[in-house]
Image (spheres, rainbow, N blue to C red):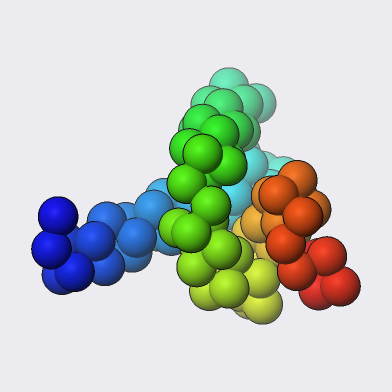
Length: 88
C-alpha cells in the first residue's frame, strides 16, 4: 500500500472514531444508535490494538480533540496499550 493510500485510510479511521464517539456520547441519541456506535468503537479499538503504529498516530491526533467523548474513548485506548498515560 502506498503512502497516500495509508494516509487516506488513517484519516478514514480518525473520522469513524470521531463520528462514533460523538454519537455514543450524545445524550439525546437513541439507545440503539448509541450502542451501535459503542460496538463500532470497540471494533476500531480492537483493530488499533493489533496495529500499534497506526494506533499511536491516531492517539496523537485525537488525544486533544475538542469533543470530550472522543477524548474519553481515545484515552481509554491509550491506557490499554500503555501509551501516553500522562496525557490520558
